[in-house]
Image 1 (cartoon, helix red, strand yellow):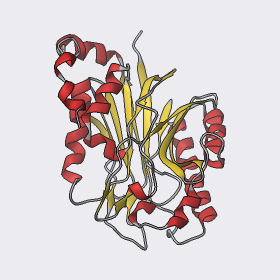
Image 2 (tube, rainbow, N blue to C red):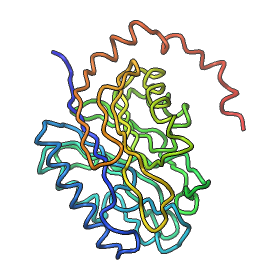
Image 3 (cartoon, rainbow, N blue to C red):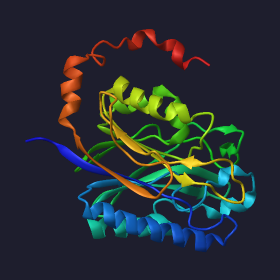
Image 4 (cartoon, rainbow, N blue to C red):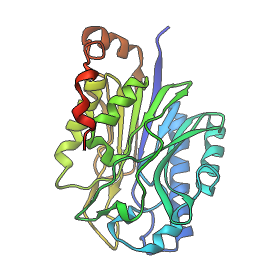
Amino acid sequence: MPRVTRAALIQASLCERSDAPFDRIKRGMIDRHVSLIAEAADRGARVVCLQELFNGPYFCAEQETKWYAFAEPVPDGPTVTTMRDVARKHGVILIVPVYEREMPGLYYNCAAVIDERGEFLGKYRKSHLPHCKPGFWEKFYFAPGNLGYPVFETSAGRIGVYICYDRHFPEGARILGLHGAEIVFNPSATVAGLSEYLWEIEQPSMAVANQYFVGAINRVGREAPWDIGEFYGKSYFCDPRGKIVAQASRDKDEIVVADLDLDMIEEVRATWQWFRDRRPETYGGVTRP
């Protein structure tokens, strides 16, 4: 019997200015996404991924300690707790990227994975952190991820997570493939300019190199007062051959839904035997400083 997973990506704009009260920002963004998750579920999605730091602005546009208060425990904080209820209500698997507080002074850029029963399956912490202009000051806010590259067994397939800047580093993407990932989600916050031309190159290349599906998500709009650029959306799914099979626009809140035939992975790997032909004993130079 064919293994087809209907999956969805949600891209959304910020509902409030970033200088609004934190509680109001979170409530507005959660309410917006709850509505969009319900719509995705009505369209038959079994797994839904949200954008990077979905419940607020991309606050890394500035370096201000006030944003430490935006972080929450995972899985016991209010946002993930709410999303566990949402997953249970709609019977969908959710990937929920949030700002995680492990303890005072220790924070991560994190994505929680929740199954359709509302059970917390685990989390991924972003491994690679940018710290550069025009406003991606992530090392001010996050410690580097320390959980490796987990793959989560779900009823919709084996799911891996990469987050935004991670996509520039093929090593972790390969590890996800070696760990058995069938769908890798890459929630992002990236603006037009320097790297936009890479948006439709890197992740299809990642899908081809590792022969799995990739779901790439980006937020939309401009975020005041920083305005570091336009978050250009264009969220998409690509298949193990690197073909983009569904894509959103660049300028509006939108849900991308696609049917992913997981049997294609074995079909593609039977043609291109890259996992068989790897030479890991020759790759020591990759891990030398």
